[in-house]
Amino acid sequence: NPYTDVDLYYFDSADVDWTSPEFSINHSLQELLAVVDLLKPGKIVVFDDTPKSENFVETHLREPVLSFKKQHGFYPGKGSLAIKILEEKFKIQVLHHEYAFACKIVE
Image (cartoon, rainbow, N blue to C red; front, side):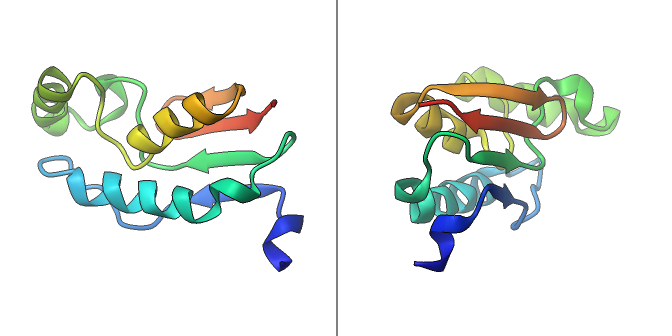
């Protein structure tokens, strides 16, 4: 399988519509699930458009972001559900999390 030699998995498709982010959240989750069995210690996983807080979203979009968080318990973003899967399946080391999220699979 040519994908087993990949060291960095970068997910940046399906731009987020902050007023209705469900499509991009689910799309990124499906992308992760397509490769999750290939992830091993040392691999890096990055999700763009996965803010750590509303402060990383344009001011006029903060209200829908906060409303989503209040309703679902987490901030919307491409990787928001995918990160939960990573945390359940692996031990990860967060390398960066502001607007984008990057982690390394530890074990």
